[in-house]
Length: 454
Image (cartoon, rainbow, N blue to C red):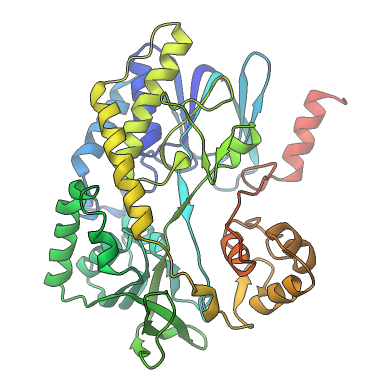
């Protein structure tokens, strides 16, 4: 199909962008891999599950209703179950290549004059001894199970790691009937207090979560971390310990918490694969954009977590600004985002920067990795193998990959890249990947045959 603007990602940023652009007379196609719009934040249970009160699982449900109803009343073409693996740039337009449905074998293309990337983010996974046991899930994974399938991962859970996501995960599990043995947060309360002015707008939400934790009698252990997960065939408990001011485990503070589920989370990382394949400049790990949310590649805009992890409210503001800007450039008029969106973006970016500073993983977390701790699950590479590669002279993720196969599996280093960089004593760097997801060779062969030999 052909359209003016294709928005990739139907989370908060993509929804806001698509609605803003469509309202200004631009033909918009909204493409997403899920079976329904909403993204991870507004993930909905399948209709067949018969959820009586899905709003109980969500924060800011009214905003979702406004977006949902606005999308239904708009002219936006919604293309669900489209798994985008590449965006091809031509002199005149862009071609978005997707794989259809759950099997991801049939190709589909969308041709557009402009592209808006609202590709979101994914969870940062920091390994620890025992983290591959059945029963250990990511914090976002536990939340997705609850929101999307109305199921809980176990009966007694520990929620651990660092970051604001731990609060809604712990309260959501507790409200669903799970006994939450503890919320284990590695950050110290004082780090949040130092950023109080920038986080003033977050206080009501934080207070509401704190009240729910009290109501469900969930113990909160700050400046603590999970040292090890225990079990043979599945998780039976975890050992947690206190951290000193430098982020090291304090000897003698270990305690055992029986549980059958551990929901662990250490923040988010932006999805930048499509932006990188298009040649967009990155600012560290995020897509660099100007005040109109334009990238440095003509015809490409970006908004939401891909431009910096900041939460749904910031994504909505950035999406609106990006949609207005893209529509203006496509129609040859002056950009006109609402002043409220510009003001909200400035304020919410300050809050996001404060949260990022306050919620950092413990500085010395790699010291807890035993040599038999699996780092790369795809290729079953251990911390000991990574350390051997480093001893042989490897100084970055790429060289470690060549010497140990860490990062060569299905996820192409998305899950293990941060851990490998930390073991090497380096900051994580974005890896350039030709495709945003695995593609069947048959699809590539058919595409090559249609284009003809070069």
